[in-house]
Image 1 (cartoon, rainbow, N blue to C red):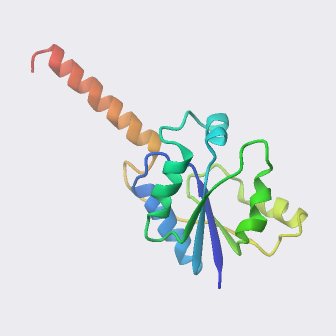
Image 2: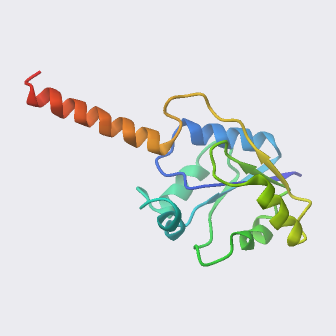
Length: 152
């Protein structure tokens, strides 16, 4: 069995997330998704729109996912989760800001050089990211407000 691990925030699930997880699942037989801890999201990105428990439930409900777990808080080293997941492959999303070579070196330093790191393909869609979706909603709201003010 080839165990694959994918990681992410998964706030406001969208087609890009599904595509990422479908691509990750193709790399093995069992897909474990590590959903970012709320404190990690706050520290590295933004205030999460949905909490970690709901995000984990939503991700686990997706067809390609065999298991979803909540990641470590930001004060725990990121690699500490690997023994519990025991992946053969770490799948990175096309737009995740992780340096593949740095991850490979860190794995090697920890005696985990057997774990492959693979970046999957992106989805060519104009709404394939949470920030893009939020920007689109704000744009539509501003346009609607302007039209309402003009009496249109």
